[in-house]
Image 1 (tube, helix red, strand yellow):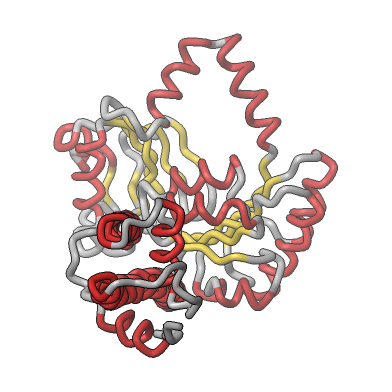
Image 2 (cartoon, one colour):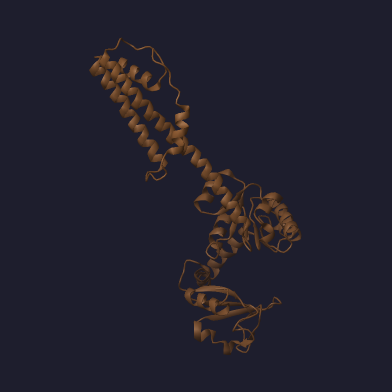
Length: 358
């Protein structure tokens, strides 16, 4: 009777010493190892059939119990040549199965470790963010919103509760937290006290109201944009602390109506507001306290001549909106200039306004 062999320690040692420099992926290693194990198995069957003249079933059984080291009796009395072949099969076969076990253990352990370390790195990055966006809810609206914001900045933290959306967040390479967005601890983990914007885009109006209340309590200065499915909830969200409430259904209906009634205007706005078009864009640019354009009249600013931009409006610090401003209008600190032009020209003007921040 052959003696049983327990390679647990060897498996652990081998798993820790497998080279990480192999160009194959871990999955490819596992597939290759399994294929080679089948080759070894069939070599064993062929060996017993050739040396001992056994039939296929007896040879397969003997090969299986030899490679598995279970310690069962031989199916037939073996010749000296058969015993030598069995010894060789044990050394090569068991050694290779130790390698397979090592690859599988490393595949599992490394995956867990990378997941833990990746989560820690992500949490640390979120904790160091400032003036970032917190998007609560990664449904159809939340995802599109994140894609739009990510064209301007990558400082976005998504809070999502649904397990099935975690893979999508990983695919989109978003900074995210998994859990209930109304949980104070989770909002603290999202670094809400240093955030500038929060979007409440959860699935229900009740959840959004509670989220707005919690967020406003944690950060009185944060700008909150809330989604409302029911128009009756709008006032409740504003009272709870939202700065702005939007209904995706109302916005969608207005957009559809505009396309029907004023298709040319709608097409122009689609082009101007679309981030995919390089032809023309509408942008708002904040004028800092120190800038070469402060306290200068529009006629003297040479914005049109230098950057080929059209100034549509100027929003004053008081909130007053000056549409189609007069050429004598002064550009003052903390004004927001709404301009239209090509993307490259807008970028040049943005750098000219605030060269230190560019």
